[in-house]
Amino acid sequence: MDPHLLRTYVTVARLASFSEAARELGYTQSAVSQHIAALEQDLGAPLLTRRPVAPTAAGERLLEHAGPLLLRLDAARADVARMAAAPAHGLTLAVAVTALGPRVVAALPAAGVTLRVLARDEVPAAVATGGADLGLVGGLAAPSDPLRLPDVAPLTIHGAGEEPVCVLLPASHPLARRAGLRLGDLVDARWLDAPGAGLPLAHLRAAHGGAGFRPALRYEGTDLRALTALAAAGHGLVLLPRTAAVGVPGTAAVPLVAPRLVHRTELVHAGSPRGAAAAMVDKLLERT
Image 1 (cartoon, rainbow, N blue to C red):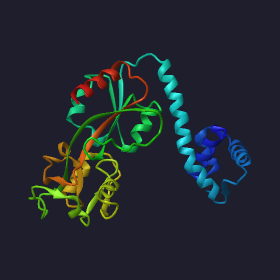
Image 2: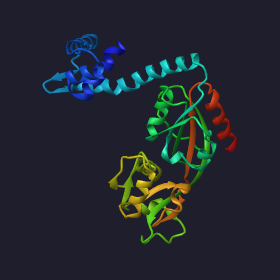
Image 3: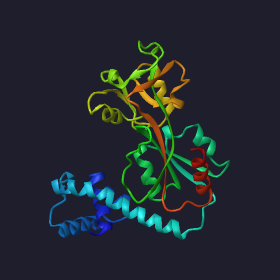
């Protein structure tokens, strides 16, 4: 399957327009139509309806495969380029916001750092495709258990630290004076769903057996201060690493005591880090 044709198909499906896809890809509209026709001929199935432009059932199935396939190709290209290139003088770090704790900040070089704050699941892809030298991902896990990261490419993963988690509530909340909270007692509470900033509600459901934890509000940003302000205003509870939850004005950070869960940070890189990236890996692993 020609990856150029596949990229064209994914772009047309995403934009729902042959002309918009041609503009984004720098092709003529005729060339885009020829790409789609060639791919349909290769696979022996129609992939798009034309009016409106939308994937067929076969096209939807192809889209499920296309993302991982194209990501792997980009990762392979980036991996080869990384090996052939001279060591970079600076450092680009892709990080999920809950992983950007005091230990990580203390390990950053004094200069030459570009920090990319991304949604949790985007970090491994950024490292695999050369968008970052290193990645740091945070998530909910049982003590010493690894996180379940997307399988985007051959990556090396190190545990870079664990810390307790707390439920962040408004200071006036009836549970704010508790010494500890059990996850099972909060199934029907009002929650903030913040997959890019907090610990996703899907992780809480998995820890509790797959039910409850309905969101009262969904926040799609990566700004931790905005998320904690929403919690302080009573829009919902949120689970955070202790260092991110303690000391937020107008809130109480109550430790989660059952089940036994921690916020785990993992360091992700491709190949053998060099230069500033290698130095930061050494610092983080020494601290661990």
